[in-house]
Image (cartoon, rainbow, N blue to C red; front, side, top):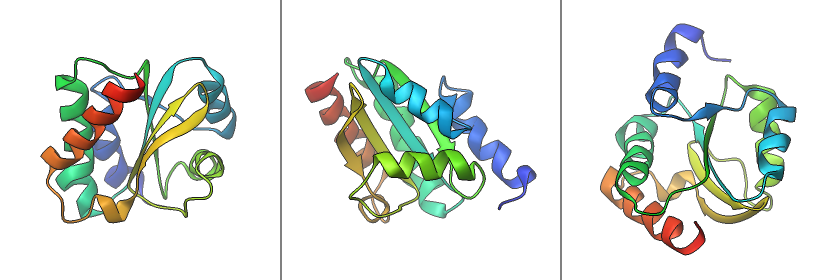
Length: 137
């Protein structure tokens, strides 16, 4: 588990921009039961989170005409039980952090795995998400 002093500023990058934290398995299940669209960012300490995942997500949300109904996040290696529960909703995809998932009416409709984030600029992540928002939101 990562120390809070390392994780909290990285969490704040999303929560200060309207993302709700999913901290328990129950909060994960409750939010994913809701009708509509839910964006879930599995945040992490890896460099690709800071370099493209978080900035890309924030760009997509800020600049897309269509947006998810709910913006949520959980932190791998910190919010352990919540992330484990999220990953059960992401099957058959293997665990991946960072990663970004879009759910519609509880069903996974779009997923960006770590290998699709690494080495790509934030603008590419934002464009990928903007296309998904246009299609599903």
